[in-house]
Image (cartoon, rainbow, N blue to C red; front, side, top):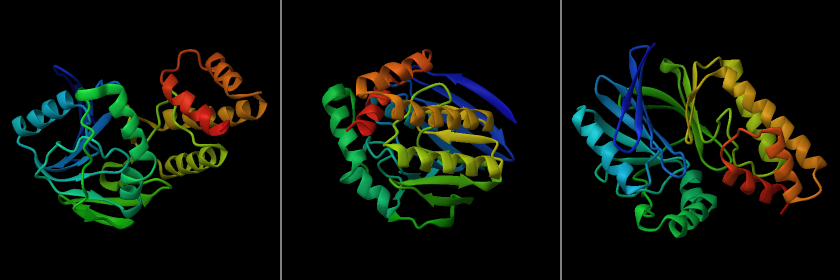
Length: 262
């Protein structure tokens, strides 16, 4: 595996060569710590998720054009904002992801971000041109598996031995919507370990390995324990910060507290 880091004016690109495929991991460095991925084979490619700030959209589109990458589809799972990104490319999603992003929790987040970030944030939503089904699919000549989740879907790319999910991050807080959601994430992450992926990709962190996945499982188990011991929302947040003083993502921690102490 070879990796090349490219510093850009706004974000940063990490380029990995994996088993004859190329992964372009774009760290937007935006206020939401968003990541966007381009999966490429012989210049044919698809994009996972969309940047949502106008300066990132412009920068990533320029990168794609300058490198002669032919984007055949944009897969929209958990991030449907940034509707001006690659307007002529096919947009693909699942039925439940469309619901999440147009009426559910994803839409609520976009509404909040629109108020918080103003004109720098592209609040327009991508419209799915094609609904993809769970299971084996091929896009841009690349085999992948669509794995439905409670909100949207994860993506397995077997020939690269990588999986994409919404939130991981071994040293940052994540949005956890209650105990059952934590258990679901733990089950999913244990499945990744059993399958022995080289990399786990996520929407808010650079590519991670299975050691990082194990760290996240331990975090989630401890989070559940702290939630049962905490007196209230504020006590929970305080105890979590004491347990993980170096973790980023305090905004996500506060959202998690709201779910556990509704």
